[in-house]
Image (cartoon, rainbow, N blue to C red; front, side, top):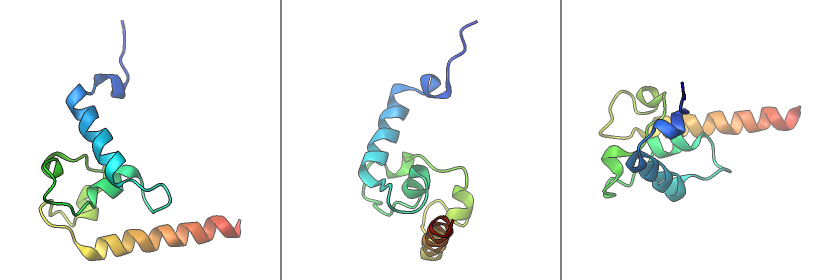
Length: 91
């Protein structure tokens, strides 16, 4: 039996959307994973905005409201990343 990886099972369209969004917004020096950063994307005029990949914790990041982004969650995410960076520097 040939078992495909998760990446191999994804369709070409889904991979293309994921790659476009990642290339567009992901900053490895900023906080969060690329999916968290894409989840918090605010470019609602983008034609891919409604189908952008969302992180597993999107409900928390977006306060259960997938239509509007909440600034407080972005601030909390940034604060968490800064704290994690301080912890890594102290070790």
